[in-house]
Image (cartoon, rainbow, N blue to C red; front, top):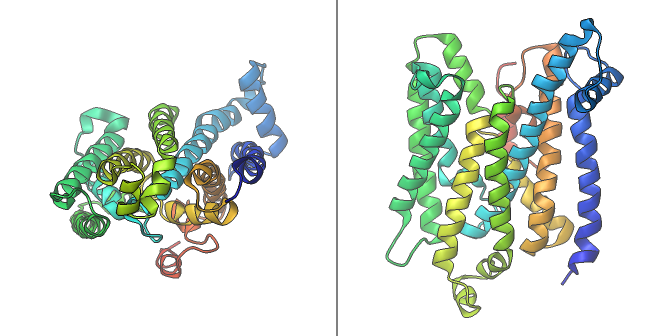
Length: 345
């Protein structure tokens, strides 16, 4: 057994330092032509209340109203997807599972496309997509739960099969909606959302996402010991005093809430919840107490740099969807890389 302090604390401190540096790079790097020293000076002026010249107003707006909320939201979503990836793999006892295997992201896509393609919930204004996506994600969660539960509770195999079946059904509905769209531009916006993008990040979307993710992380950290027991099987966990059915319901609810929130504000960003838990286990072992410290930090680093790559690429053409970059992460599934590589760009 790897001692917690020896294996995790130095690594977590190193990742935290890298996280702060990455956040600075996320604010300073972009396609607008603002140089690194200028971006850091504008950031400092906003933090300290310093005075700026009139010709720096545009650069200040880019740094504080576009880059900074986008970078913060990338960090929040990366941490949430990585942590829920750990939870889902324990929930279904399958190392190839990720937060989207439960059909929640596909359900959210139906709600988002209803807004983008047909103007549903237009009265909600800028919140229409997020509210509709989150609502449809919760509806998908309820459908999967009702279909998957048995008299003996939620079983891993039934949960995976039910989630996969509903995911295909929601994806089919989404595809039909895209092909039924009257306007090509609306269909393009829908496809960009389906591929994941942080381009619409605003300060208004950060607090709700951050609050949900932090609450989910706290709950998962509290359940870390029970996750270790659940990973050893239902009989073993029951003998250790853990109710596997109750724990699965708890994990299902936390995963659905965090994933639904992440998808509502950023679209369906793949591979983070699949790759990062494995990377964390390679670094600190399989104990969930350690993994749930390292995985969120690694998820932040991955998605912040993925977002930097996708938006700096836009200086040479149209902005790339975030999944374009995550699919090229070393170790990502070849099928995913091939699929995203076929996106016109």
